[in-house]
Image 1: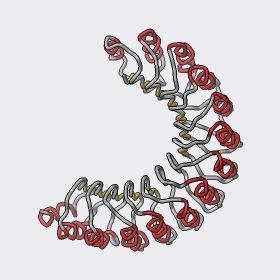
Image 2: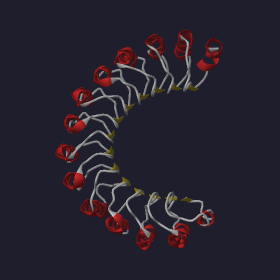
Image 3: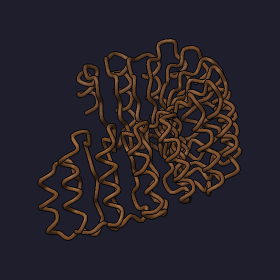
Image 4: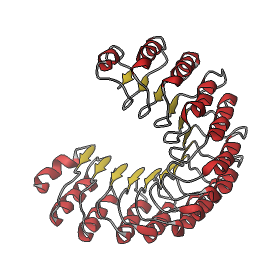
Length: 380
């Protein structure tokens, strides 16, 4: 079957072979099609590839037009990374996006990838490494790669790995290197604590820090650690545009600090996610107040499961009306009831700049859904 499909695959810009069971020969035909063809995007996610099959695939990756490769949950190991590195270092490599989510590549595997990332021929700009069993032990190697001057990495996702405070210390050094190009860093659920916040603060306060997007969700920073991050964000010229602090044990005091720099308009923060921090109406009020400030440029705000009730709706609607930039608001999984529905509908009808209001999983009766249906911008 793969042999029959090979000529068609060679003429395809996109090949999706997700959740497939391959015979060894089938992978050889795929590799041949990649070498001869014009394929730019290949998705093999959730397809189990044994060692022989992956070696065969890599022979087609060294000289092809591939720009995006999805190998998520393919049961790859550190040995697989060794097979992959020649393709990444090839003079003909065009690969920009590499997804390795859910593979046990471990620290040794990442260290091998870091060697390829330092090749002058490597062009990878996005690396997805969630749940890959890497730890702080490989972060020095990654930091070295990011600082090498050859790495083209703009986006890296390390979420759900035990990076820890020591790992963040290594990464923070890279963010302060003038040759580092990294614009997006995801460290969600990486067992970080307040201890890493001084290092992150130092990196964010570095004059030439390139980061535009930072995800620190599902970590235990506490109030003091979060305040250190907020102090760093106040730096004039801080480039952060998207910040995720979901379930970080934030307090009302931290929300006050977040609101303060939103009112400054520096950094030019456009997206803020602070859901699953139980600060209630009183805590989130400070963000509604910030949205009303003329210097606030926030476009997206996520306050899911923060303990909101009907008491906040008047302030929320006033903030939506006053903001000239807000486009998307997430208030799902709170305790809003039918009483709030008329006000929510009116404000969405009267706010042309708003594109979406997500009110799913609040305490609305089913009869309210017909009312929500009259406003296509409300998700319920």
